[in-house]
Length: 405
Image 1 (cartoon, rainbow, N blue to C red):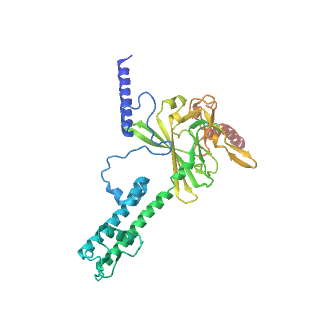
Image 2 (tube, helix red, strand yellow):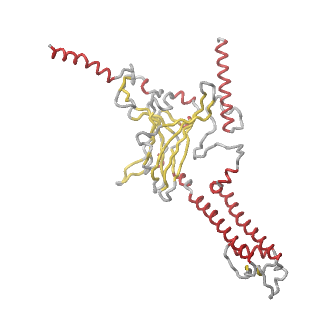
Image 3 (spheres, one colour):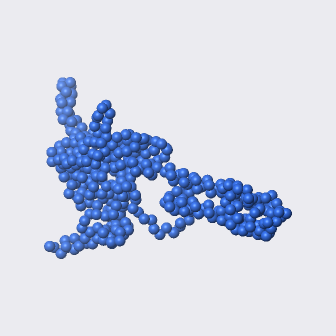
């Protein structure tokens, strides 16, 4: 082997190892070289739609306090219930301490059994009774044994302050609880995706296909589907981009991304020259490290809130030369959906190249351009319209010469 070529291959190997190290470091893997010979890496999005990205070293955490409502709603239920309980207990104990301090300063505790004493806080003989007064006042229980009298104006002001504070806490906590319970995240559990993507031909076009379905009878309103390709690459300047996002066209220009999700839908991405899979074949797909992120959005019919469901497909979950089996049949005058066949696929004859115009037998095919009705020959690149005009040109010139004579 030539020493120059060996040095070049060594540099490429070091570059790949360095790229894998940066990828693993970014994804938080404990093993620094998690991607070496096998094409496996940690998912960017799990199959159930959770993003596996950890945000660390956030210095300005006061931004979360400024948006306290969203912070409370985003908490897990255990922490939210702890905050919910702590807010009320702290309020009761705080005002209970203030009631106890006021009763002690006005000697109401010392004259609790004196019927002639004009007490400000009646029947408050210690902190526990002051805490009960605070709880009964804020929750409007009103047993009648402990109360704030009109003998001191500061007691009335204190009672008004506690009532306003309690109303604010009720509004915030109940509002957060209602929003948290009614969030449409659980609605996404009944939106399902196929376990695999398939690549096959449809109408003599190479397509990437996957399925989505809705298990509920109440349908999603204005459902939309979109997809992203997550793939790392290195620029010509040597910059490594670990998670570059590329758009996967699912029919945005034709309206195919807007769905009537009544029965399972097979989503189609046509692999053409503008597709990120145009250069990918069956063999190269096995060597690639990529991930397809699928996002389904729609409005929940019952609540009117926007729901989003996500999933992902890695290169190992893309089946080349497969097609989905039908899961819809007609029985007793109605369409029957059999979800047991939702993920079933079967093999079909497929070429190993994704470049449709360069496959054997397809070279002379006419490919319709995106700009209009002009067509070109895939074999020679000759514009068919120009070729037809040139073929008609001698006949036109002959007709003109005849008329001149």
